[in-house]
Image (cartoon, rainbow, N blue to C red; front, side, top):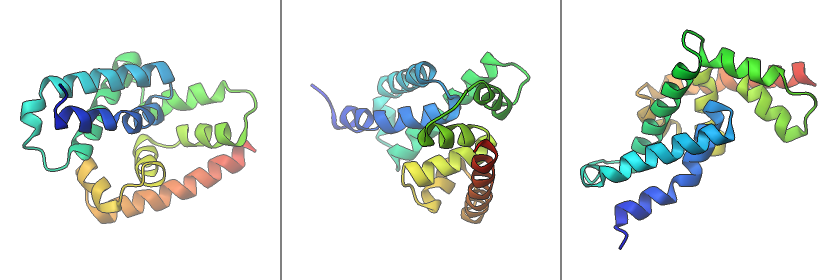
Length: 157
């Protein structure tokens, strides 16, 4: 029988997958990272009862797992450089793919904040808690990220 913690974590699965995909740029790797993170969290479900914000905790754990995967995949190379190189190999795109490619070219922090705000719908306060930073810094990253995204889309068009 599933506990309420199991139900809460499995309900986050799609959101976690989308977040991992935005970081890793690869559907199979995002699926693996999501599965690994959920498995790890479910194995520690008793400890999670003390967690004040399960969404934030789960997405932070997933983010850390994704960054570990990027580091092992490309030791010594910045994650944003890896995603930019992968994005350069794409031929022509639909509008959705164009935006996804432009987003992949942004620095990791801007990409994360934009994804959490615009796609997942978190508030700036919630994002600040997830990323262990100030709310004002999240707003600054959002502003710079939106500007950079517009510029990248224009370059790709």
